[in-house]
Amino acid sequence: MRVSVICTVLNEGEAIRRLLDSLVAQTRHPDEVVIVDGGSRDNTVVVIESYADRLPLRVLVEPGANISRGRNAAIQAATGDVIASTDAGVWLEPGWLAALVAPLERGQIDIPANPQSVAGFFVPAPQTPFEIAMGATVLPAVEDVIPRTFLPSSRSVAFRKEAWAAAGGYPEWLDYCEDLIFDLRLRDATGPFAWAPDAVAHFRPRGSLRAYFKQYYRYARGDGKADLWRKRHAIRYATYLVGLPALLILSVTVSPFWLLGLAGGVLAYCRTPFRRLCGHLPALSPVDRLRAITLIPALRVVGDVAKMLGYPAGWAWRLRHWTDQQIHWAASRSGR
Image 1 (cartoon, rainbow, N blue to C red):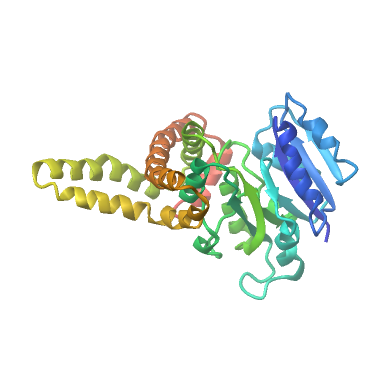
Image 2 (image 1 turned 90 degrees about the vertical axis):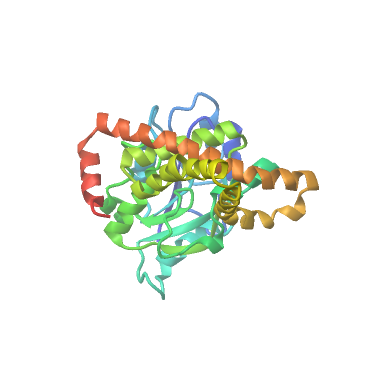
């Protein structure tokens, strides 16, 4: 089975070396590595090409290509039967590729039998207390994953090239959430993902509130563009615009004990991030522990505000730029 690793990059510079070094160190070597550069203005392409003696590299330059277009171009150019996708900005465990393609090579004993796609995993590689809190707040731990329903990030996923074609490729009309749409299409077209928890990619979470807000604003805008998760977003609006004001009014006009209900709700909302954070606390100083703990509720609120602003922006974009591709996508998801 011939395996092609694909990736898109833009202005990564020297930082791309960590990914390339981790590809060199794989216990199962890729048969080719196809990287699409979206028009970098720095030395990204030069750095990548310096690995040509250590990796079976092909570098394509497509100025202005978004992530979806870059991935589709890389897959179209790939000669492998199986595509393993990752991202710039990550580094891979040495056994990543071997674990990721194993279900496709041997099939699965459990459901799904004869899988067409495999979900790998990803974990944060934080370097500051803020990044530790970020990872705990927004990223699942492996024990949180329900394998049969898990939708992987394209920083750690594999699929047969035929399955990619059956799913219609990555949606080039989307700039964010594109891998989620692709996952849903792929699952609809070829069946559920096999689960490869040992195929681990590491990446560094956002390092500031500003970067985090921007990231989740864009994610929610992508949800709005693709008309995803209406119920989930409606619950968020109801909680912040109806439930929270009602509790505050009741605590002032009826009894301050209503604040206990509010505090209980906050603790319940943050319970999972607090649980994930516990494993990191022993390595932190007392001050950094307190900082990480208090950051989690703040990160929850900032992320929710970003989503509440981004989602209607995505809806407005969708209404202005309705295309045949979007109409087909909306029709395929109607009633779900």
